[in-house]
Image 1 (cartoon, one colour):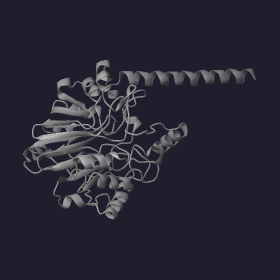
Image 2 (image 1 turned 135 degrees about the vertical axis):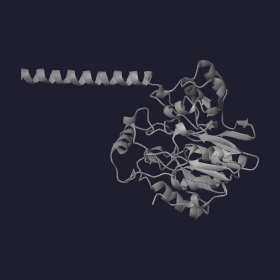
Image 3 (image 1 turned 180 degrees about the horizontal axis):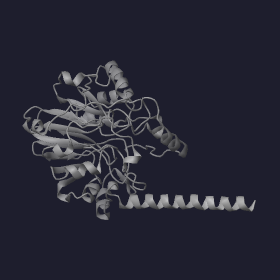
Image 4 (image 1 turned 180 degrees about the vertical axis):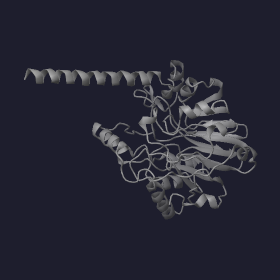
Length: 376
């Protein structure tokens, strides 16, 4: 009996020591890794306090949205994320169309879009090159072991090969939209970064000068030469660590030229803000609408595919493109399900849908490349 007690004590001590080492490692990683970004200063928080979207030190959604999950839901989510559920990732590498830097440099006049999968875009408009949510990393997480790798082994073009970028628009600070490694490779190529309130603190932490960052609140407009960028509402949340939830704002974006009007939803649950955006700034020539990584447990902050189609109608889009799918596993649904469900819903609502292959160059007046069913 004494021997058993001794063994049990030693076992408990070993387990306790291992847990202590794990806790210390996590704390050191969070505090020392640059992946987690920066923190807004007290001076910046004072500026944010003037925003209608900032309450008691945190940013808020327009209506009372529950952003917390029960421990049971968190457990189910973790099990579902790491458990190899059927068809949540492709059986083989997702191929992409390639494009070279000179093709980008030499493109003039017509507005075109190149999708990098998920929510990342290169847009050329009025002879300017714009990036939206440039997440070019392999895993949407602060460490490679914490996420599922990108579905495609290649990108349409490697970040190092990208030519000069006039502006970058960022919708919020989650890892699948704001990537430390990508920003490090991009920052010397970019003139100016546009972000929602607070996100600029991450960029400054990563070595981007304050005068190259413009932070915006919902409904604010910024003129960029002959273009207009509008920061518009979304129904979501933010945070990169364990204690910074809602410390930065999230948004959708509008890109306007004298003749074209484009909407980018960012991440958002379905809500009345879509109709409000459509009434104020629609109709849109194209709306890039979130479609993927949904679940009943977080239905207020991500749309189901049927809601994606309805939101496209709400913003008065002439055509919609489903995004936030095709590159990463962040939900528990089959990877093809979002595009299959939104295709059916868009047909029922009579909304034109474009579904280009990752890397395909498409123009706003659509081409054959915009209507492929590449996932099949």
